[in-house]
Image 1 (tube, chains in turn red, green):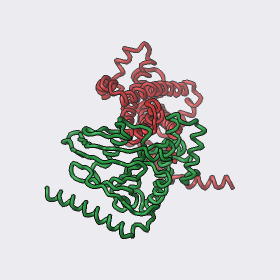
Image 2 (image 1 turned 45 degrees about the vertical axis):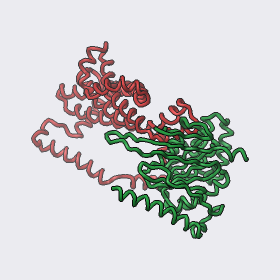
Image 3 (image 1 turned 120 degrees about the horizontal axis):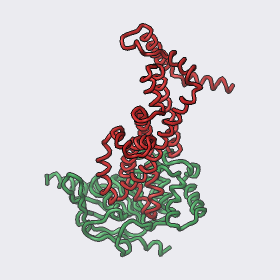
Length: 260
Length: 267
């Protein structure tokens, strides 16, 4: 009984229109390549990509190493950006002095796209690895700072006033009112940040690295093996999806009151 | 008990407040506003929306300070918020990230006036009284409007304040919940007899609840009239059909219309 009801639920949850659309997309792709429509002459079919994966990559340590390396870079860049960015955002929102000093600096640096930091970063940091992590960090850092700052600024004044009327000290208000108030903004900053982090790490790997999923994709192009290019793209998409799920999970844990 | 009833006298003398808004000319909301709120009485402050009722309440709560005049509680000047006064806001101010019981015990835990166990048992008693005990581990987002209001009353009362300020607390509730809350609130007030300032824009609610009614008017606003509401206690809905109720209502209506006519003539 249990398994059959689970099956029914699975069937109900299945979006068959979406499934048809995905199947049509793959079929169209296959046909465009088969009939050598202009532009598609050198593009591999999905089955080519699969067979390349099956025969050469599934058991290749190098391929899985690329996954690990990219994840590590995203992980370091992302975590460091949050660890530094959240307190800085909180300080900007709560300390007028700090705001006066720092905000203009942040506003000058913020519009510079992360990839524009690549050359200076390579010159500055002693290893390539550090420069890639740094660029990844830049990608998520300003996003989280601005989100937390805005989060602090938009705390309902009634929430702070009520705590004061009930006799709370400034430190208690910070811990129990300000921090939880900005958690939703932190979550938004994390969601946006993790997406940018993957964008940045892939580009940085193509420019400045000899490992990682970005490099794998680029090597596919350079070595004229388009199946590898598409395998790289699919892998990157999957990696981004997995990290987003991870961040979503963390956010749900951070906001137990939101599930209701 | 005699002691408890003689505390919480609020005196407001010649208070003025100028509101500075970004990119707009400043507005003189209040000027030369004077009144007293007597201990252990339910004073209702009534006036049209935007006349500065909330501003006045925020100043008594200590969130804002007046530009002119003085405000005292039992002859001591108001400087900032304190646990002797508690405010119930127009829209719910329960913290959404804390469960109902966490919201309620925040006050005593912040003051350090009770141990955690004591605060919890007192909170449980209050929540039982307010019919919320089954909801103590729910988040405010899971409660109805009326339940939120009752949770706020529990949160306010656990700290044993001298004065309660309620800023249009039942606004936004549907008519039935609102009437239930009003009746409920009257009962609670009779029981505690805390000095109370209750703000509303609704005439019927004002007369039903008030021991004393302060009418705001003019521009900038001040108190234009104080009326003793000598309807019998405890109040039930029957008072709304009594002759005295209608007399009081008529008197206030006349006052409010006068004010509006004067305003129209001035324009």
